[in-house]
View 1 (tube, one colour):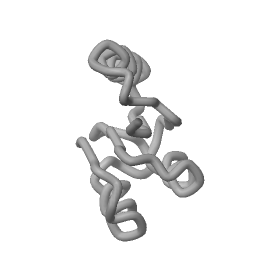
View 2: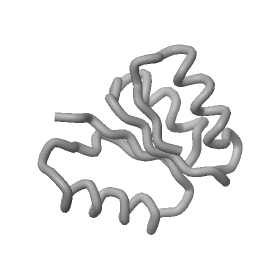
View 3: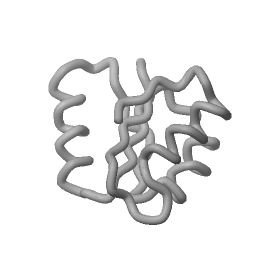
View 4: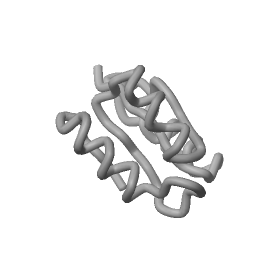
Length: 81
């Protein structure tokens, strides 16, 4: 099972990704969500997902900065931006 973390300020977008993952396969489990990269990073450190799905336009820490930090600390996490 792949553990997925969702980071994005748009609740509808996160909900759509959750729904899409549930409809595709039972091999994906959404283990956490955050509305901003600043909140997401410590949660990612705790949860250690396999995949990070994030969107541009988050306040405080955007997707690119979050991706850089996650890549530096956890190079095995796959990312979808």
